[in-house]
Length: 459
Image 1 (cartoon, one colour):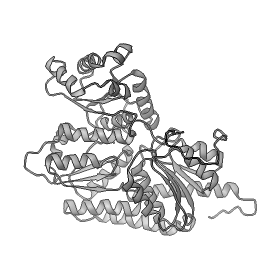
Image 2 (cartoon, one colour):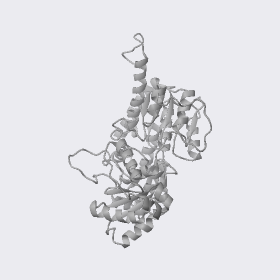
Image 3 (cartoon, rainbow, N blue to C red):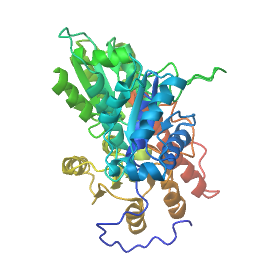
Image 4 (cartoon, helix red, strand yellow):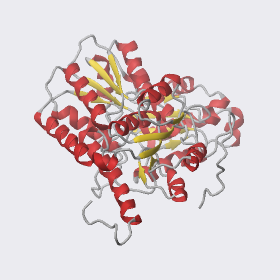
């Protein structure tokens, strides 16, 4: 009963967040940076911030996360971090020799007002950045936005620094995933490959944070988008951005900079979301949908038909990042489930909230939506109006335990379960896995609550 003091009375709070449903910008920027091959993320701030950002990613992905820091002390906090960053750049290229250093700022360096482009220019003028090596940056103050904002800012920086247009268009389609698992990125790539679509995905953390154990340590794994591919994104025939809060900014920047037209879609979660992605890919690349995808789609439809009786009418509480929550809510509604309490800690705007409201408009119940909101409010809603299922990150488990509600872990962070880096919940196959997870916890609960008389062998 860790949250037993949560009151049922809900009071309007405008300046206080309790148990936030988000983390800070640099975590997202660091994650995006890992999706560039040969890139070393660099945290321009204190060691404490850097340690937290690394540990958050390491605990979620169960993989060592490499990064560097400017290691601010009292002096840098007062006089600025230029000297620290200049020394860091020199040390990093001398000792680790990455192809790219991706600098993201912290609250401290943002408040000081460090001018990263000016410092990088000085590093080049002083000979601290070798020729052929790159330094990119994103401003990621933690007192605004969330980890999704930081991810979006760093992905946009990849466009700002690397995308170039030669005037000769290629047949490639740019794929920009939102803040999703490495397994999700791999599934999105697999769909493009079976459709025969040439693509450039950026960032690409597959094979970086879900790579194989070979017995040999590589500081820069085989995965990640190459610099050459990032340059070529400006010549692609189009861009598909998956997720408005995580990927749209980079897609539109690429359109503005290199005249690469873009389409903004929801994350391909569930039947409709995957259909939209596959269809847009088909139209943009001018290809046909292969039999293997039609087979997977048919299997998903069969699962929905067979399992619908167990899912129908179940009331759900959903917490997560905006792109994840919107796509997930659409999927739940398509299964005739009822998402009645919905919270995202990341700011996403009025249009986003309106889109959510439209998705749940016809479920036949009043729905609570708060964006941005916090986990305290989510818990209070559940206390006043219980649900059958909670879907959210690891922090939801305290609410699930206190209220005795089944829970499916989904989103970021997940600290207490394994496999999310390897098994996608996107695409047709991912939707089947997600449904299996949901159905599994609901049936486990039914078994747990059954008496000797009502216990069923076949369910």
